[in-house]
Amino acid sequence: MSEAKGEKILVTGALGQIGTELVDSLRDKHGTSSVIASDIRSINEQNSTSKGPYVTLDVLDTDSIIKLCTDEDIGTVYHLAALLSATGEKNPELCRKVNVGGTISVFEAAKKCSLRVFSPSSIAVFGPDAPKHAPQVTDLNPTTVYGETKVSGESLAKEYGDNYGIDVRGIRYPGLISYKAPAGGGTTDYAVEIFSAAINHGYYECFVRPDTRLPMLYMDDAIKATLMLMDAQSDALGPSRAGYNIDCHSFTAKELADAISQEVDGFKCDFVPDVRQKYADSWPDSIDGSVAKKEWDWSPNYGLEAMVKAMLDGLSEEH
Ligand code: NAD
Ligand code: AKB
Image (cartoon, rainbow, N blue to C red; front, side, top):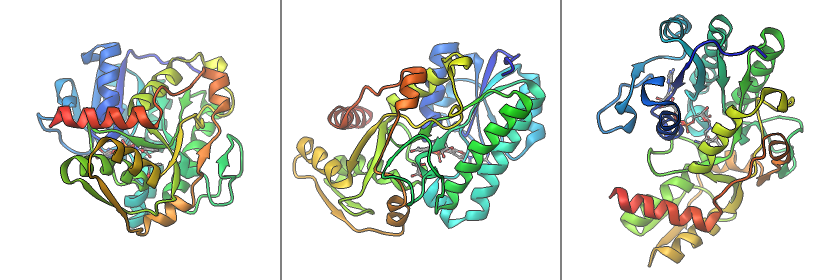
């Protein structure tokens, strides 16, 4: 794998659910001026990302990415720009264009500018034929377009690694739960929305069945995993480097609602499934993260109860 030449970091899709927190963590670690945040949207002053360098950047514009990486001496890109599953299924063409086209743009820039890349995958790579406790290696036959784009992202990462020595790393993130930025249009958004609904209204209408079980992770753990993977020695990482399953938690929508009821007096949740139920049903219940554990020693800090408390405390403080 080739070494990155530049010193600085570029984050694409930085105004989203993950970027909002990843940019802050990267700036704490590397210094504010070393981390350039970017997104197709323009920024407002309330966003914490506005405290450091910010550029408006469309990931489909390869030339602008290359120019920015050259002018700013970028060495590493955290490529977060994408459409998530629910938004993606409503507009499959745009989903393919942004998720696959944007990833190719970033990998082409990596080839030209000797960049290291973090390019996240998702549990959406698995389809209904995968074991419900999904192993690291199994057939990947997703039934969502979003899932297909994530399988393509992993294949492209392998191709650019094998053919051009580009160091691309990725995690198959489960549903991520956080409060600093809204969830971005995915199937697992219920596990985020339910918290502010509980605090503000004491009521949530959940769009999946109560017995829907999915792998989930608190954002602090997701950021920690991302930084650990990017800090790992390259030669410790095997063929799963572009799409690691990671150990996380597995609970049903009802178990989540019950855990919130323990903390929020009188909270009530109804379950009224919509089209997102189909996407959730096509994904695994839980995932086996033993390869990530072995290769870069990953294990999460937050369980269901600790995550529920952290979410409710965080939201209450923000209010
Ligand atoms: P998000 O939807 O919250 O943010 C994505 C950002 O990309 C948005 O701010 C959007 O404006 C931006 N964007 C869209 N099109 C763009 C373009 N053409 N150019 C530049 N920016 C563009 O998503 P997220 O939750 O932060 O997810 C980031 C990555 O992590 C994605 O690849 C997603 O598939 C993956 N992931 C997320 C989760 C999760 O639960 N959040 C789970 C699994 C995988
Ligand atoms: C989504 O629901 O689309 C994302 C994901 C699991 O990739 N949260």
